[in-house]
Length: 248
Length: 370
Image 1 (spheres, one colour):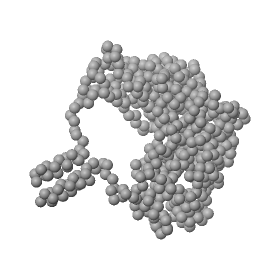
Image 2 (cartoon, each protein chain N blue to C red; image 1 turned 90 degrees about the vertical axis):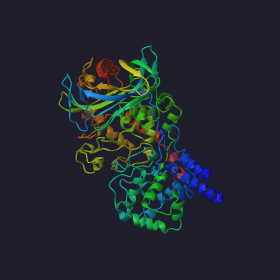
Image 3 (cartoon, rainbow over the protein chains, first blue to last red; image 1 turned 120 degrees about the horizontal axis):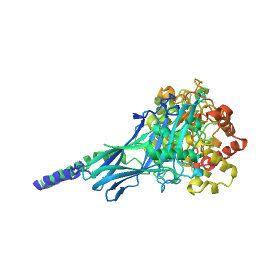
Image 4 (tube, rainbow over the protein chains, first blue to last red; image 1 turned 90 degrees about the horizontal axis):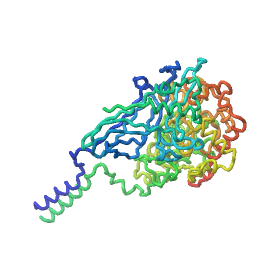
């Protein structure tokens, strides 16, 4: 009889589906935040045509929508070995209350990491027509094949007041293949089981117009997708002062 | 004694099996009657994937029931109007009339949208008031200016029908007939309405270079106007792949069709209550646009030429006009829009016709089963 009772108990134990709790610490990870500022104040996406910002050219402007890609976040040890999982992340601030999730770089091999890099836009290997996963998000960022194909690096849209005191739109749409920007920064993170860190990748919106190159929106920033000179202005601003990182 | 214990053991084992894994629990009583004919291979490989709702996976019997209901006027209060009365397959499941006419001659106030590749879409109606196809499918049945039926009325008719109770049981494994199950069946059928054989599909299937692919110069010129900042069409309607499914990130846009405060111009604001959403309407699918005249939410244009002319010279600036149009403010001031040449307008229309798919119009699986 005992034998059967044991079997009964065993059968219940065997078929119960409680997931086993493990206390093994997770592998090291870094959580990347994506933050956006105008002169150290958090970016405000405007639903209406309120002009929240002024640049050094005295343009009054706002941001109604901001979308861009970050790809190839890579971290490097001091011996130059690196951890690269070929990631990409679409950041979508197309409405005032949009929330951007963090990107978590998981399972980081043990060691001391001293440098990170990322690409603003999609890395060149995947920046070809239909190079990314066939998703709604990626399809919404297609860069026309007649202009080289691939994906927009960034779409920043908004309105400004012109010299003639009328409201006009601007569209900083970057994306010509080859205009992606690779950036690198020192970090200090020692990876071992159970350790984690947060790194904030910050886009300083004011620097798009007040960086190395000063932009006057009256000079025509409605249609720049086919304008190599204007693409270059923003590429150079991205390379110099638009981005910064903060390790927390 | 031993036998009794054996029975207890086997019984316990059975209970253990039955109660284990609550998450995977199936409604055992219903399982036998649910047909094991799930349709999983829906959608061609060059489309983005879509997920079927967990509580309404496509089955052959569910789709077939939905097809019958779609074409059966039994859903309307006086049994004169079916879904197909206003979503006619010949016109890409849209209505060639400006406004549809419901029971007792009631005239609607908005253009019936074409039903194509709905499986990839998440918001329905021009103002987006429905967040799911099942929900959308129920509304016209009880809308007083459409089918003007009551949930109780339609259920009673279907329950007393000679065949529908059997079809519902066969599709959903239940003797219950409700507006919700009607919505589910209709949604299943509507998800199968897939168009995938236009010229533009070939471009993607072949992964071809557009310059080499388009043999017709006018079509290629139109493609380039559509896909660049000359026309700006792609920023709302999407690039090549989005055009095929209409699966869009930014679904609602104000395209300068309505002046501030114009009657019938609230659009998305009717749902959100936000004044900044006034004049925003669902960006419609352009597939088979050649066959789904008239155009815009109020059916104000009857030809594609008129639509293109509107974007060229008819834009009305308003408080919520999309920033994409405001980029164009100098041209709007000068031309009233893009200021397209005659050749450019012809090219855009020619390109739009490369989205035509007559096999969709003629697909027997989409036609009336009666």
